[in-house]
Amino acid sequence: MTFTTKNDVWLSSTPSSSRRKQRQSHHHKQHQKQPLSSRLQLVQDKLDLAWLDSCIQILKSCLKNHAQVPLANASQRDLYNVKCLGLGSPETSDNARAQLAFLLRTCDAFDIEYTRISIYDPVFTNEDKDLLVQLGMRVLDCESSDSSETHSIHKIAVEEKGTTILFMPHCDLTLYESMLTTNWSLEGLRSIVFICNHFDDYIQNNSIRTLESRAPHLLKIAPNVTSIPLPTSPDWPGAFNNTSVQFVTNENLAALVTEMDQKR
Image 1 (cartoon, one colour):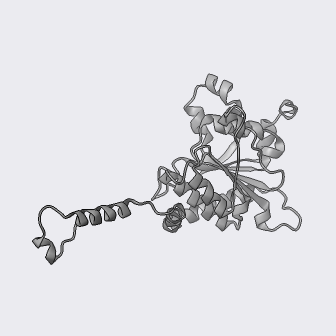
Image 2 (cartoon, one colour; image 1 turned 60 degrees about the vertical axis):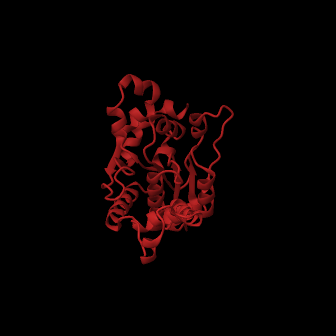
Image 3 (cartoon, rainbow, N blue to C red; image 1 turned 60 degrees about the horizontal axis):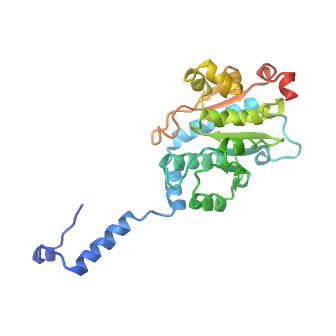
């Protein structure tokens, strides 16, 4: 919207050089991006509280049903670790900022310190990394000798103690398979609660031949997970489309991990 003053009607139709500079400066300021921390805080403040509370309650219920024997003399914050993979760049993506804001609010709800969050995406910019480090997160360095994202991600294993919340919003088939392959053991699968796309979607959208060759572990785990979908976000439907909380119950673990798997 353009506002005029009484004096504007007496100005020449051709603005002076000084006036042009003022307008250019104003235009430049309007289009200057706010610091990433400010843009992230804005998203955090505007997350729909009713939706967020529903998501937290679903996760609480899943963690309660999934919980291992609590560690001796451990506080709640010591029982959980968080790994976030494939987030995207919060600097350049609105959806990535929304997902990061959700992750932070979730950790706040469970009293999980940000220092217990390990995070990686090859698309992170320097500004992304600076912010994540300022927040206290551990930004993983997953560069490998052949610069292969699959190779580097493949090395990321969950923590040996406690429960690992694995936040992987909208990742591709290869990345999910890499994480499952790395952690394919009784201890690994028992310790993970996934917040990610419903595994069944990958089964439905790929042929069995493709899955058997490219994602055999995902093919095996999909029918054995308990999956509870998160409600649709009123503000960020694309960021959380088809996101579910998923975990393997103790009853299904035996069907997933055979003696041969353990000896791989």
